[in-house]
Amino acid sequence: MLEYDFMRSAFMAGGIVAIVSGAVGCFLILRNLTFAGHAMSHIGFAGATGSALIGINPLWGLLAFTLAAAVAMGALGERWRGRDVAVGIILSLALGLGVLFLYVYTSHATQATAILFGNILGVERETIWALLGLSLVSLAALAGIARPLLFATLSPELAEAKGVSLRLVSVLFLAIVALMVGPAAAAMRLTTRLHSGVALAVLLALAETWSGIALAYATDWPPTFWIVLTSCAVYFAATMSRAA
Image (cartoon, rainbow, N blue to C red; front, side):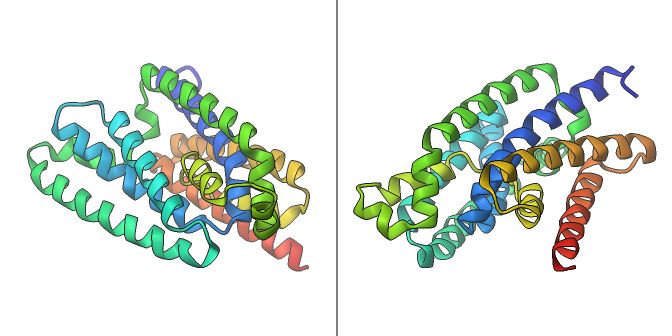
């Protein structure tokens, strides 16, 4: 399997994303922001399609839209009760733009479909370097805000009284977020300690991603299906083991 260059690229790209997803996902679960994590992928699609329309690399459009959406979500819903409303509003706007861009982009339907669904087996080396750079920035940013983020998550009123800006922390964290719920949710079912949870989430994300790619190679089914199926299976197994 590893004799093929595209498989090695897939494992590298998947591993990079899995590490960031596992680490950030723990805070995503603690802050009850799984809906925001899900929304980011749809928002990113609108940005990627829009940038492709004007001849720009879809990656930069995706980044621009998700960062702008993160700032808007954080600014509109820094309090718990306002978050779902803020995420829903931004998601609805992004989906509307995505539909418009896709309608205008019908002459390039194949590329639009690739943007929407992706294919980890088709990742190019230049994309891997971009992923690595973005991942290092994300992990460094997470490390920089980890303490105030945890403080604001566990005790927002006390954190605000101590001078921590809840709005700023929310904006900064959402700027790091992507679709990264499954491994972290399973890890939080198996341990209550933050550091252990982060480490376990990273390991689970790596295992689920790489096993999904290997299963896709063996069955010729889409990698996304296997990765998501594996992630859900691990989460349900962790839930049942905790209940037992």
